[in-house]
Amino acid sequence: AYGSAAICEALAHRYGATCIEIAPTSLKKFFTGDGRADKAAMMHAARRRGFTIHTEHEADGAACWLHMLAQVAPRRLAA
Image 1 (cartoon, rainbow, N blue to C red):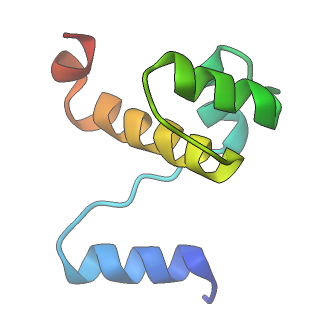
Image 2 (tube, helix red, strand yellow):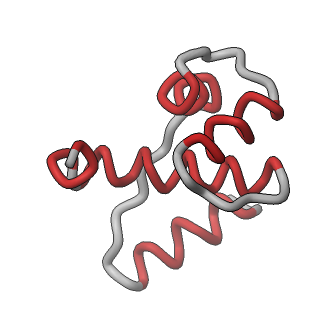
């Protein structure tokens, strides 16, 4: 396997981290409430949660970060 996913998985394995995969529609549903959210909606959701973002890629990163926190530390996220 090649590409960014393979690199991420290799690095995670190397450092003992767990990879969690999520479909884009599931991540959008988690972050915005709409699995078909567009880039603007993702950016709005990130800013609404207090992230300072400038691109849709940063919004995607914020969504991934919060999704990871919801998986590994759900009580801390709710606080």
